[in-house]
Image (cartoon, rainbow, N blue to C red):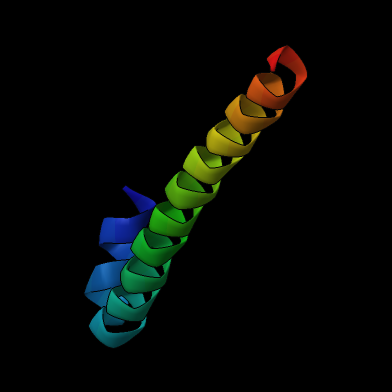
Length: 48
């Protein structure tokens, strides 16, 4: 709702915001996967 209103007022700014938001989401997803992978590796190390 707020984003659409903001988009009407300034399309350039909201486009920049959306792209940064999506890149942040991608970064968050990758960091989460990396975290899971690291936890799995450490668990494997303790098991072995």
